[in-house]
Image 1 (tube, one colour):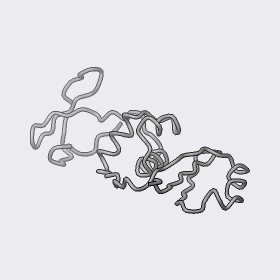
Image 2 (cartoon, one colour):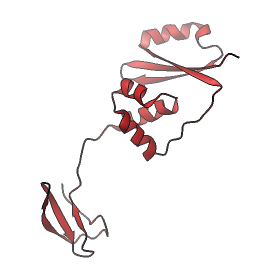
Image 3 (cartoon, helix red, strand yellow):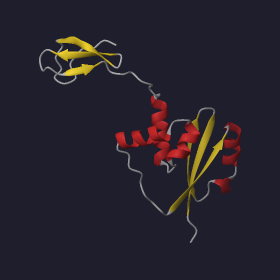
Image 4 (cartoon, helix red, strand yellow):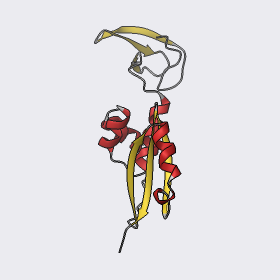
Length: 139
């Protein structure tokens, strides 16, 4: 990976300064800051970040999202912290979740009693769909 600027001062004048943990170290000539080549690491597709944050806002737990999307619950927690996501709290509603394929989803919406008196959202999960339904708690 090519280094273009010092991460401390933004200068483009630096020199090689040894190897630490099999990574090239550099020294900035301007501010004398030592730095290494950034690790590229494993990048997760933005689709999964967006989908996990959506599901988190819909009320799913970290582990439920992990089981659905196959992304670590720790990664999801880190994204929630990174983007400062706050889940709205409303105890008057109770969400239920269903995973359906396209034909099952069509059949579900054919019956009016399935959606009467409730809020429904459908989100895509690969070749299936997740249906989230909110019903008022019965007093």
